[in-house]
Amino acid sequence: MKPHEDTNRTPTQSGVYATEVSASRKLGDVSVTHVAQASCPDSCPFLHAGCYAENGFLGGFITKRLNRGMDRDIDRLEIARLEAGAIDRLSGERDLRLHVVGDSVTRRGTRLLAAAAGRYTARAGRRVWTYTHAWRQVPRDAWGSVSVLASCETEEEVLLARSRGYATAMVVEEHPGDRRHRSGRVNLLPCPSQTRGVTCASCRLCTDDDLLRSQNLTITFAVHGSRPSRNKALRALRSARSPKRERPSA
Image (cartoon, rainbow, N blue to C red; front, side, top):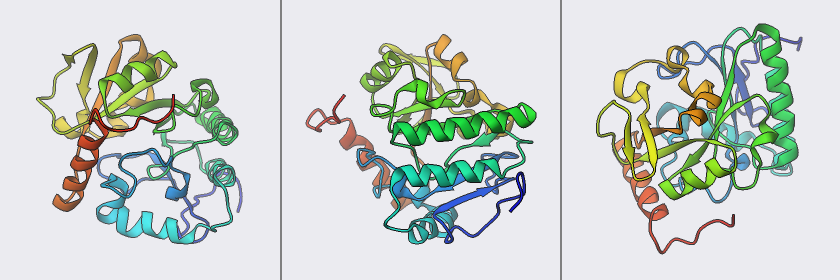
C-alpha cells in the first residue's frame, strides 16, 4: 500500500482500522482510526459496561470485528505500531480523530502515535485529537502535538488530570443546557454536538487542548446510546463516582 492511500480495510484484518472520511454524522468530515479494545486500560469504568463503542452500528460492525481480528499475541505496544502505520497511510487532508474505539496505555506506544500524528499534521496542517482514560499511566508530554483530553468521571479526577498537564473531558448523566457553567471547582461546557447538533469537524473545540487548558474548561459528554447501553453506562458512571469505589493508583 502506498503512503497516503486510503486505508479503508475491513476491521478483521489486523485489529486496526483507519479511513479517510468518517461515516459518523456526529464527527462529520474527518479522518478516523479505530483499534481493538485490547488497547484500552482495564481501569476504564465503561469497558464492557456501556462504552459507546459497544453500541449500535459502531459496536456491532466495527468494535466487535476489531476485537475478533486482533491477534491475541499482539501486545499494546504493537497495537500502537499498527495504528501509527495506519495514520501514515492517510492523506492528512482532514482533521484526524484518533481511535474512536481504543486507547493508548503505554508511554512508548503513545510516543509512536504522537510521531505519526506529527507527520500527519505536517502534510497539510490539519489537527489530530483524541481522549484517553490512561492519563494516570501516560504523561501528557508523550502525546506531543496531539490535542488529547483526559477522560474523567468526577470533578476530583478533572483536577488531578489538570495537575498533570491534561485538558479534560467528563462524562455526565445529562446536560443542564447548552451553556458553559460552573460546578464546584470546575468550568463545564456541554459538548456542542450533543446540545446543538454541530459536527466535530465544524466545532473543533476538542482539537485545541491548549485553549481548553488556558480557560480551565472541561468538555462534558452526556451518557447516550440505546436504552440498554445507556442504562449500563449510567450504572458504570454511578459506580465510578461512588465513595466506596477503589480508585486507580495515581
